[in-house]
Image 1 (cartoon, rainbow, N blue to C red):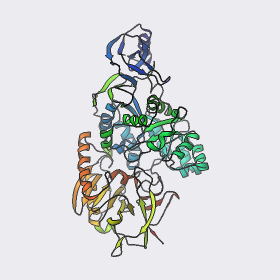
Image 2: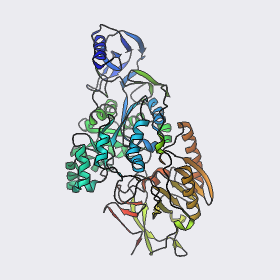
Image 3: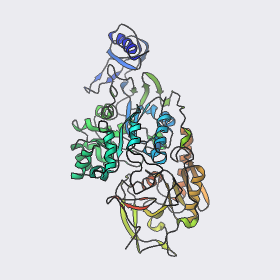
Image 4: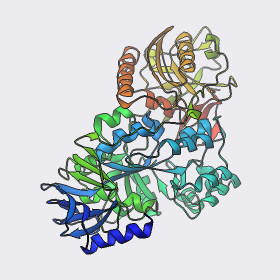
Length: 572
């Protein structure tokens, strides 16, 4: 049936001349336009709400006083950070009320380029929720690191033609955007009439003015209330983030009021599978927001109507005639416990279980992406080149790091770790071209006592990151990840204590959610044997992100993010 035919049938139902496919009765309908709760029937025909009033239907759902509201929409997330392929992520998210997300696939883009992004698009079809994406704007994120690919303006223009690519993803090269770099401007030009996401932590004043003039319109990296207030005042969409590692909701939620609410979204950004399983998805953020005193209906707008408007998705995010029948049945507007989820009028989840098949396979192009030069124990040795060294300092629940200077830990003239000062060694091994390039550094706050932790999830270029206390443990970890095709590993000496294979681009598992959760549990137990940090892998992965202040590391060495330039490990 063509569009006209479908509309004729919907109109007949809306007029009351033909029965609906489905009618919800006996509930409280959340009206996001007026803020009212309406005790009225809701009729659905061919995947759309067609009327609110008194209707007859082939099927009737008695809500028994429950709340009917639009399904939730995630406004900014990286699918890869869940460690799950899209099919498994959908299976995990849908029972929490989510029927759509807007992802930035720059993680897999940094490993496989255009082929990786297209693989992500292919792997996210035919699922009980929509996967929309933004075209990655910064692959690699900066010229201070080496990724597996480059995405230029022409590649992005090709992606722009895909129906599920909505705009340009987070513009992390804020110096290039504000400074008018021709390559950056070419990417912005390609999306100048479409949504463009920002990424400019701590940027303010005239530099922020220039950045916004270039084109980005949103911010998910705000960490200070004053920063969020300035960016709202300058017209940005404020994405209030509460993910696995970065937790900014407590700081930013007081900025939400009846005026600013229309420009605010609740987002996760990076959400690991076990975090999702333990706390929920956007339903969790709703609970937090309401717990902070936000009106429940205002909170709901930030995960429904607001993201739909921000990304130009018409007739989504509300319960109204002609709007998509992506609906959630909630027990109340405080716990936001999800009873049922409907996607296009079809029941896809009930009482915490996904009812729809989620079997879309990930293309094989994402396999076998580990290309490492030969490694030996000496590969991780560095001469102690000065009495003091720069150290990356971790901050709890933040991606921002401190730039510290400590007396150089050394042994036999070589850079060493020092558990007594909570100093671990870092190595970032280039893993895309087998160049043999390794960047070295130190990190404080990881709580590593012995052994090593290694990951091929290392934002955004996703080289091989190793944090360790000795050469042998670090070598064991790196070699094991090459054998696995990527993942996470905990080692002690020559012993592998636990591992989580991530063979899809070194970023995602090809296994079901339960298998990944079991692997994460085993990994957590092994971490406890060598490290005091409760969940070190996500913080480790962001140590390699040279667009988040203040000090970071890549395969080329330490990077002063404030200066957007390399800096020596040892001070003079």
